[in-house]
Image (tube, rainbow, N blue to C red):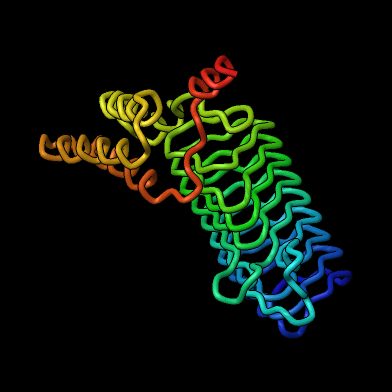
Amino acid sequence: MPIIHPTAIVDPQADLAADVQVGPGCVITGPVRLSSGNRLLSCVQLHGRVVVGPGNTFYPFVCVGFPPQDRKFDPASSATAGVVIGQNNQFRESVTIHAASQNDHPTQVGDDNFLMTNSHLAHDVTIANHCTIATGAMVGGHASLADGVNLGGGAAVHQFCRLGRLSFLGGVSGITKDLPPFAIASGISNVVGLNLVGLRRSGVSHEAIDHIRQAFDVLYLSNHTLPVAASAIQARADELARQGQTQAAGLLGELAEFVQSSRRGLTPHAATNQKHKLQR
């Protein structure tokens, strides 16, 4: 039987695994499903269509599954796909995760993510795995974070933006366009370099990092259009693959694919921003 504190309120529709712990003051409303090993410490609210995998920890005042902050959404008549959460995530105090604004795809959080205090995931957001979202960071509706993304404290991600794998958005910074894999952005819409620490921790070789540096020069400092830059990076990836440099080839191919599939365009480089300032 789940361990449910006497002051907690659990809807009869909810489905809780036998070892779930629900602490004092928690409220579970609607068809919430909690797999084994989940802990709701106290004053946690889970609402509506929320599906949670095993081994997650919800700290006080976390709120998951409430209606999206979308003027088009009417809680009385609009259907939502809710929220789906994977396994082994930590949701620290006062994290908020809103339900999807439509019925075909939920707001999603993958595995092994760390959401720090007061961070916010808006409706229809997709978070992959091993991401760290620091205190007060905000992810706008329909945005997506690939594996290993880091958001610094107070960072802001505009709606529909994509952040590529192992990218890093610094504290009190914001983006309104896509952030490529392996990039660091700081300030407002300002790429400043590569996430060297993240790449090294992920086991990327020094040689492969050098190839990524060269690819970023092609992408940002060669005055190419994005399609031309993406084609050049992919051609280099194919050449490296023929040479047997599979790690570098895969990473460059990943970067090229991200650029080719961008709909919002890419966050500009600091050098480009400075050039525009000088020209004004």
